[in-house]
Image (cartoon, rainbow, N blue to C red; front, side):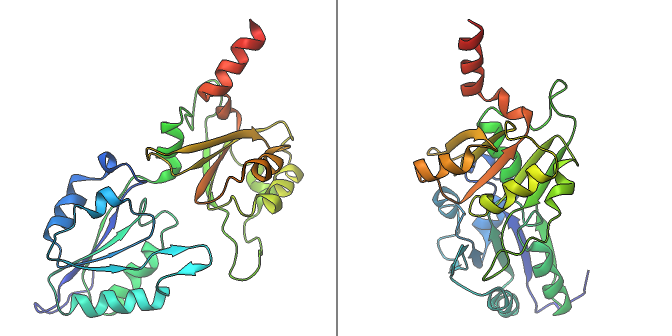
Length: 258
């Protein structure tokens, strides 16, 4: 880690988890209570924001599709400036900083500027949301592997950088972050890779929060269900036989067998 002068503070890249404040780490909570400055994202829940030191400076750097409060370069610049003025600067990010959270980029830029950095992991939504929905990502009878992948498009136009056809055969459970908007492009790629239209899929919005929403379907009908229900981001997608274990699917199976 880059050594800095004693006058330079430290930036903590803290994962806020998926939303339920009960899943936030004790270390993260302690840092929020001690922080001089907190730079936070849009998906951090209000219950966690309430833990911030009331005397701390708050800076909203949230990013949503098409609506960025701050550009990434501006966020990094602010972190560097604040670390030169204060002892404890918290960069509070939804989920885990190093799982599709640009934490690695921010860490590298801070270290290059001579700012000490420490990472405090958070529970990522790709694990927590399906757990709250009753969907295990692995199961001895259904899946022995899981792949985490981003479904977010390039700026301006969808250009797939992910080899979806290969991923379709790469593991038995797929967890797609930020992919709801691009499912019409992703699903054909997965089908071309060998998955069938009957492959189960679950979409989970606002994972682990009191208003968590779930939409179940198959690769063959999920786009129609999204159009019918108006289901929208932010959400993750779980694809594979493990979705059959969702309580709703289990209830339907029992009715068929009964």
